[in-house]
Length: 426
Ligand code: PSV
Ligand code: MN
Ligand code: MN
Image (cartoon, rainbow, N blue to C red):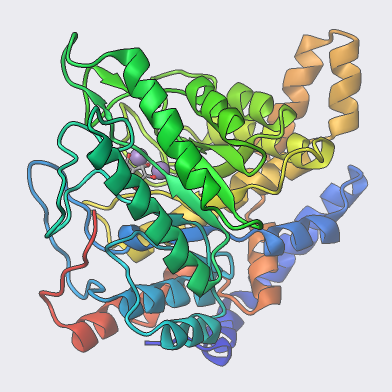
């Protein structure tokens, strides 16, 4: 199923007058406050977030998986789903593939399909947390960190193969997330595991094309429950530095222990020019991978405040790669992703409203109350008309969720794909 701009324009007609009123009201008020509204709208339109191929099917938990219907079961269908998201929101212009789940059969055809949906290939992800069919070695006790050289070599070679696949598609980065660690005290020698990981990452780094980046993701626990080799941003940062200029840390919001000050991590990494990528999601307890902004929207806003500051003041940091890393157990994944995209844009728009000069001044004067007022004034502004205007101008839907439902997207997908389709992946 494809959604073309004419259909959306027609759908938008109904809400257009009320949108215009709300937008005019907000933008008058923002202009009086010194905001450059057209610039904010442009920034929102330019902000594109990659959709991971594994977030388009029902994720499930270790207790079970409740399928919903019309899931994409091929790479082509996953790309079609991202095409739908992008058509509606105009902010999902990229897909992130996971290998071996998404190995293309016909590269030219896949590239053409991407172009037809106006999407590009973001980072490619390797998988050394599962054993693959016919694999010689097992990752049961780790991959890049493993005690056995043959196992490490197999894992390194897999990453090199993933780079080759990504290269043929026009990807420019590899994301490595390792499940390696230990379940019980004494199981592993920490130093050997870290040394092996560092050496293996360097081997992968050597195979990286000149214009590629390596993103090293960290996570404190799960699937290992005693220790994880790349447990935190410091370890990831250290490994990235060891590898070289093209290696960066990747922050996944769910990969922190409760109450971690993630915005401060963002600031530190950007100051050091080492924040490469970002995975959005939200959580209450652990790596819950639920809808962005559904639990801690103010924390998301504070993170965006640091991202905006870094993008304006840290030329040493490349423009970060944005991705949603979510899993869907209950909701229709496409509806959930629409909600996440909206939450991301909302937090970004609010952060763009912050008067950075005034904030610096208040900080210099140690006027703590005013610092807080400046942040909270921006946070309390209802910026949704700005998001709608950015979407409308790019040919998207004023309300992606309403359009998705009234166009009966899921019903159409079920009709085309059947009730029992299953996506490969997480
Ligand atoms: C596992 O925690 C994980 O969610 C990581 O965040 C990776 O980015 C993703 O899986 C895909 O490997
Ligand atoms: Mn992630
Ligand atoms: Mn995760």
